[in-house]
Length: 160
Image (tube, rainbow, N blue to C red; front, side, top):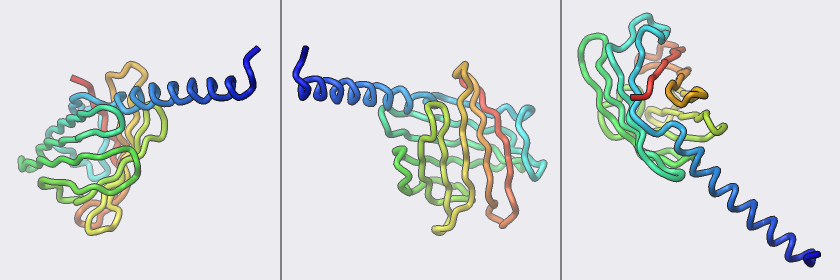
């Protein structure tokens, strides 16, 4: 039988290994290129974008998210941000009319929450859930748009 301190040290080491392996897996569930399925999505203003592509790259706890969007009027948006899942605000670069900062948190192995802010004020909170097949991601966006109108969108993305 091992001395008590050796067993405790072994349990701590195994626990750290499980946490470190789990963190890498968690951060990877949404990594990839995702395209919006407009037909399966619902927008509170009944005026969905023509297309959206999300590219999420990274490893460990840090990701770089790039969004390319074609609005209903044909105008385009391209914006990006680099964030950890630590809840800290990071700047958004590009032309996002609804936000200039974002922060992320991991809620579960397949669920993340991203808070977008404009001028320091929360504009929308997006909850993203990756399906069990890893090929579908549903993002529920709640908040207000740049004109102050209420937003409740359910966006369905498919992995390329």
